[in-house]
Structures are given as structure tokens and as C-alpha cells.
Amino acid sequence: MLGFLNASKRFRALRDRTPLGLLQLKHDRLRLLTAIAGITFADVLIFMQLGFADALFTSNTQYPRAIQADLVLISPQAKNFSNLRTFPKRRLYQALDVPGVATADAVNIGSKVWRNPQTREKSSLMMVGQNPDRAAFNLPEINQQIERTRLPDSFLFDQAARGDYEEMIAEVQQTGTAQTEIGVRTVTVTGLFTVGASFGDDGALITTNQNFFRHFPNRDAGTINLGMINVEPGHDILSVQADLIKHLPGDIQVLTQEGYVDFELNEIQSNSPIGFVFSLGSAMGFIVGIVIVYQVLSTDVNSHLSEYATFKAMGYRNSYLLGIVFEEAIILSICGFIPSLAVGIGIYSLTSAATSLPMAMTVGRAIVVFVLTVVMCGASGAIATQKLQSADPADIFS
Amino acid sequence: MTQQPVIQSQNLNHYFGSGKLRKQVLFDINIKISAGEIVIMTGPSGSGKTTLLTLMGGLRSAQSGSLVVLGKELSGISNTGLVKARRSNGYIFQAHNLHGSLTALENVQMGLEVHGLFDKKARHQKAAEMLEQVGLGDRIHYLPSGLSGGQKQRVAIARALVSRPKIVLADEPTAALDKKSGRDVVNIMHDLAKDQGCTILLVTHDNRILDIADRIVYMEDGRLSKPPAASAAAKVDKVATP
Image 1 (tube, rainbow over the protein chains, first blue to last red):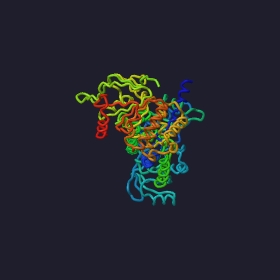
Image 2: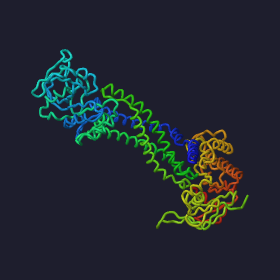
Image 3: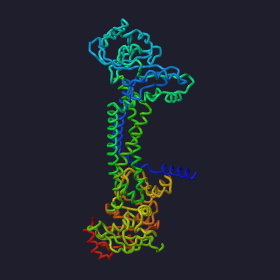
């Protein structure tokens, strides 16, 4: 009760206080505008970097995101979707023993060089084998044509693949098929879908597990890359996950679908150059912001040094003066953030229209950038307040 | 008017610098100032007047000897004690030192806000009354940049006196003003101080305003001494204005 009274008293004191920081900022409009423009610039820079990074992360985890399974089994040595390593297929059958597990299916992923039928050049594609009776991905375009992959050496081809495939795509659209080679085998493209290229591969071919192993004769047919588990209705996914971890030997990771997507994202963020490049870009924006805000605040402190010394002579504590600087920092961070949010949304929609990268302003990112802005301004304020020490009240008498 | 001293110093010494560069600037200052007294301190520049003023105002801590202000020993006091001691004084400086982003009214109420006793409304009301008393009732919402030198100094006086301090310390308040504004400023200080019963210690070279003093103290080379003959004092002043 006493604490509450104290707090409300403090709040009243705060509201009663002359808003010196605000008044100081308002007094010098040009300086205020410079500061706001600087913070907005820094924030837009950060928004762009985070947006691009996120767009690249999203576009490179499209297959993992599209997996329709409750739980995912992968090798503990798995790196990412195109480099998952293998584990024994037996684990799938063992998983079926666990109560609550409805289905367990294998997905195989490998990289294969094929000949572009149009340019006759070789390029690397990702080949995905799935169980044609239970679609692995939540991609309707693929699932509607899944029957066309049952014939030997027939594939669905990603028409958003990197490279010149117009003629082949036209041929498939007109006649329903097109032929080319993978190694010594002649293969048939029996359908098209649209996902897009990733870092490692120019595009993807989707087929059945059986067709998959036709093209990877050296791989042990008793191994698979990824296991998909569906849980019976009425069973808790997390408790089935726990049971699976207990039941299966340690040469397997059991992840939820979200957990698997996080695993993929984490891999890109920490082990690929883009994570680093965009973090560096965001850090640059952050530092630019600190420098600009520091410049503005320290100039402001400098030009009010004699006024501050006078306040000290009148008996104001140092903390009161610190409060003025931090008040300015917070006002600046709010005033700089709002326009940057508007500019950021505008640039996102421009970029996504121009590059077809999936860019959108999320609430989470807006909050992250706002917090960064407050930290940025607070840090600049903290550096700027060091100059306050030089406001010596004894000096103004001489 | 009681004759209880509000400021009393005994064998007050003060030094600047340290080690070999240590230089004594105040020597054995013994002074007693009673409540309600208006004391003018004069003397050549560099004689230590301002240093003594800053010691009494709690802007520097006293080093040796004793300095009791309003019953509180300032020699060897803690930093927070000094900050508190400053609040019982009103200051008027040679430069007005008003805050350029605040209106006259807001500047004056800053003298009250430091005490934390009144809410915003009460502070603004008292500040407005104070500005009325210094003859600026029609200028309360002006920024300092819109006021003349004399008007700014009057705002500074209002700021110093609005909290009804026991002691007013002024350092050359008229140095930057012409004869008439200077006279007005001093008269206002004098009248308000007499009204409120506060003690004024005023450092000045300006011998046009010596007549408001109850007592004149002369300082030379860090020592309080007898003032030289009037003509000699005038001569010293002419060459020594900083």
C-alpha cells in the first residue's frame, strides 16, 4: 500500500515536471528535423536488411515449411533440407509401434545434374522422392498431379527454376510431356509446378521414392533422408514426440513441424553467409543511428551547458539533467520510428512487387525495430550525458 | 529583524590547484552577515570575491576553516549536502543564464520546481505573480530572445526570488546593463528583498549602486580589508573591470 502511494506520488511528480526535453527539442526545429530524419533513415535501413534477410530465409525454406506432417524425423547430423544425411528406414517401422502414431512415410532428397533440353547445358536440380499415396507437401499444384509421377522416370518440374526453360515449359503445357536426360537415363517431365530456386539448386523435380532410387543407384535403399509422422486424432503431438524420443535409438532427431522449420532457419542464419551479411547490414544501420542521435544530443547538451550549470547552482541534481537528455532520446526515438514504419511498409510492397520476394511488415519486426530504436537513442543519450559532468555550477560565476 | 547571523565564516581559507601549483586565494576570512542585511562586496578583480560567493552558495565545498550558512556547516559537507544547501539560496548572475527554450514564466517556475513543494498550477501562479512584481506582467509568455537585457535580468531576479530564499547571492548583476536598467534592477532587488526579509550579498564593481548597501565589504588579495579612500576605490574600479 505504501509502495503504491509512493509510486502514484512519483507519477504525479513526473507529470508535474516541466517537460524540458520536449521544450528544448521543439525550440530548435531544424535540429529536431535533422534528428528525426537521421533516425528514420537508420530505421529504414534496418527494416530493409531485416526484410531482405527474412525474404531470403522464407524463400529458402519453402519445402520445409510446406511439409504436412505432425512430426519430422531427421538424422542428428542433418544440415539442411538439401543435405539431410540419411538414417535407417527401420526407424519408420519402429515409430509405428509408438501409440498415437498413425502413419510414417519416407521423403528422400538428393541433388542431381540434368541436361537442360533447351540449351543442352547441365545444371543441378534438387530431386525429391515422396510416397505418392500420401502427399508430403502442402502444395496443391504438386498434389493434383501426383498420379503423373507414378510411371518410371516421370517427374514434376519447378517452372520457376533458374535458367532458360521456356521452350520445355511450352512443350509440357501443349503436349503434356517433355523429354530430357539425367545421366544415362531418359526422363519425362509430366507436369509443372511453381516454387522457386534455392541457394543450392536451380530448381526441383518431384517424383516418387521408387523413381528417386532409380536415379540414386548407389544409395542404400534401406536408408531415407526424412521421415514424416502423422499423429492419430485425439493424441497430443508433444507427448507422442516425447514417446518417440524415448522409444527410438539416439541416431534420430524427432522434431515438430515448427521445430523442423526453426531448425532450417537457424541453419541458414548461422551457417550461411546471408545471415551474417544481413546482420552486419542491420548493425550498420544501428550504428549510423547511434552516431546521428549522439551528434544531435551532444550538440544540444553543449549548447545548453550554461543553462544546465545554472540549474545545478539552483540545486537541481545531476539526475534531473540526465532525465532531460533521456527524455529527448525517447521523444526522438518515437518521432523517428513512426515515419520509418510508413516508409518501410511502402518499400516492402515496392520490393515484393519488383522481385517477387515475399516481403511484408510483421508486427514482430516492427516491435524489434522499435526496441532497437529506443536502445539506439538511449545509448546515444548515455554517451551524450558524459558532457553534463562538465556543467560546473561554480564556473558560471566567473 | 533579528541579529542572528545567517552567514558566518571563521578563518576560512581556500586554495586552487594542487601540489606545487597550489595557490591560496582566500586568507583567514572572518565575516558575519545578519539576516535582512544588504552587503555589497567590492574590490579589484582577482581578489577572491567570486570565490567567496561560490563557497557561501554551496557551489564549491569549503576546504579549511568554518563556514556556517543558515546554521549549517558547509566545510567538509557531502556532495548531496551541498546540492541541498544550494536550494536555500537565490542566485543572480552577470549573464542572465535564462533557458532559451523556456518562456519567462517557465524559467521563473524552475526556481520553485526544484523544491518539489507545489504542483504545476501553483508554481505557474506564483511565478506569474513574481513576474508581475518585477514589472513584466505583460511579458510572461515571451521567450528570453524576445526580451531586452534589462528585462531578462529582471526575469532572472524573479527566478531567484520566487522561492523566497533566505539568502540572495548576486554576482555583478548590473555589469551588462545600461545605467537606467541597472538602477531598476537593483531597486527591484532591494525592494523585494526588504519585502521578503532576505539577506543579499552582492559582488560588484559598479559604484553607481553602492548606495543600496547596508554595509560595504572591501576585498583585496584574498583578504577582507578596510576600503581605501573613495577616490582610490573608484580608480581601482576603472582599471579593474573584467
